[in-house]
Image 1: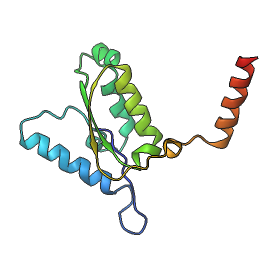
Image 2: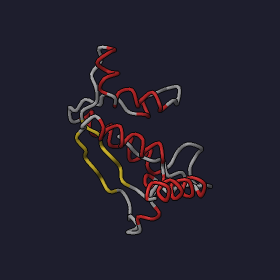
Image 3: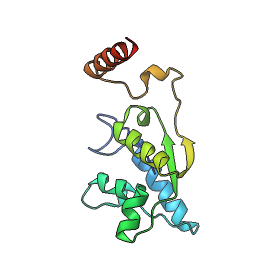
Length: 135
């Protein structure tokens, strides 16, 4: 799954939030109903969710003799739409031609300008690059 924790200051414990709870419930539901949950960032006791990315990369899995994830469940929420780690996971899934199941978990703003906002410096660099390329 790709999900953003969506931590609510003063409500949730550090590193926790509604996204984590929904993800946990989804994993338990899948296991109870006979689905194999191959890998999920929550399954790492170290808390190193980046190790999860290896399971999304087909070539890496083949080199290790491991199975690669074939389907990604995306828990769509406002927090996901500003999470660059989630964007990286989704991109990796797309690059490796995974199937996607998208579950909308909250109201999503229709303004795409709010999705994965670029820092001002990155935005300026991109504008300069585009201006140079159009010359």
